[in-house]
Length: 210
Image 1 (cartoon, rainbow, N blue to C red):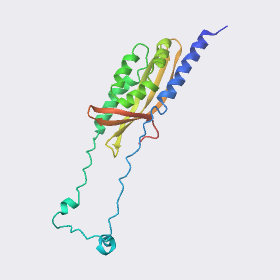
Image 2 (spheres, helix red, strand yellow):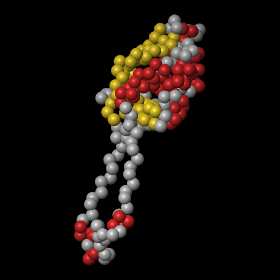
Image 3 (cartoon, rainbow, N blue to C red):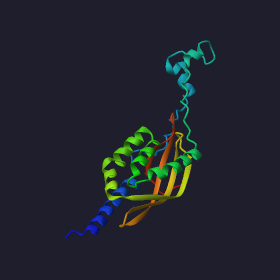
Image 4 (cartoon, rainbow, N blue to C red):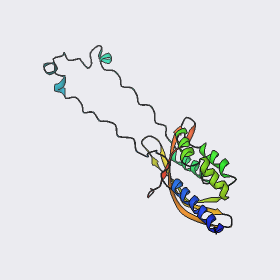
């Protein structure tokens, strides 16, 4: 005969494994890579401007028309800076929503959590994490979840103006009458300053932190 309690326990284990793979692994193909160093150009040696070498008359650097002969380089666009303190506060407010995977409240909380993300990040989150299949599993199992943050800390500014917020904590999942399971969590959230304000632009599995 089929052991109903064993079946429910197995079902919960499957959900735990699925969530562990989704929420503790690398969620999105958003690479936290620093901006490459600008290409450094070597100055042109003086002899390369000599008319005997180039075969062209030398243009006076100070004479009339010098400004027209030497176009002014275009100014680089300003970098949007994400304030590390504000970014940390944003994540502290966001965590209870993102980690609410309880039946009955998860749907509303996840929609609120997605509103904190950039469009690209939100699209990936809906595809890889909060999709109809996961929502159905949580509802059918009557899952209850909680998250206890042990550390929320912002790193240094990245060259592109973004900042990474490091989070360490413990996720606890339980099914009524079936016990609970917990696991440690280490994640990194990439925060960018956008025209709409600070937004979460990427989520990845945490390493050793700062």
